Image (cartoon, rainbow, N blue to C red; front, side, top):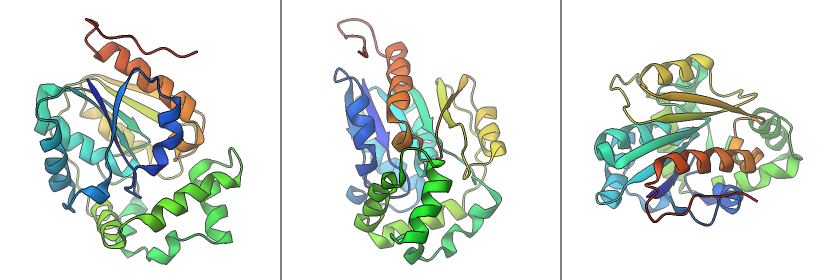
Length: 237
């Protein structure tokens, strides 16, 4: 079974570095980068990614922006999706303010003293030192700026999907997520027949502010999803 990591707004996949280091080496992990995908809309991105995994069983891990992509993949890949882990993510508008995401100037996503402190406060809940925000800005600067703008528009235009999710769903909920409203998580849970919410200490950038705990959750989900025959169970020291 393949563990497929779907990145947040930056789309590069670079911000999974600490999470990858914390995951057991026994897991077969793919990191998707939206730089390698030509599609711009949520549904088309999911279709392009689905084509890569037509013959594989997968565990989807959707971070922030990619929640809706993971949701769409559930229906495109059907029974091949053995589970989904949402990392502080969403499938509908995450907050009242997200409808204005399309109007956010890209200059606001560039590194400066004010932006660093705002991201540290809002995204990291002031955990781990302000240096934690630097990789985020580097990833945003590295991202294709036209595609980045398109992803912001996708968030602003999100509707409320209605198809249910049959596979097990685990939601990693930061202890203080200032960007995702509780009602957004509740709506997601209402569409899932098997939903587990796990709180992890940190802010919205939970895979970056607490990668070890997130890795433990993902490994535990994988342990229950992988066919035991001939497969080593992921272990932590």
